[in-house]
Length: 83
Image 1: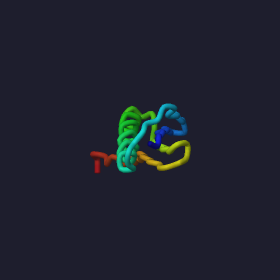
Image 2: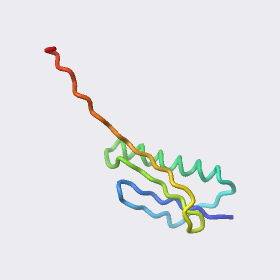
Image 3: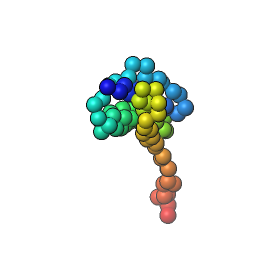
Image 4: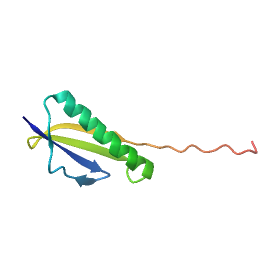
């Protein structure tokens, strides 16, 4: 059974998944990559520690999938009450 590693890149910082996990089908791998990315991104975005989170999935040491999640906040000027 293939072993998948979910390496995290958060604003340029790289966190390596040394253990990995075994999966039976590709859909499970995709779901895990998306769930991992959204969980980390949610915390990082709310805390203001990151604007982009990427999950690099390797299968037995080779690139397999990449999930990128980014946040773009554009503040708009607040109209003055004097207008």
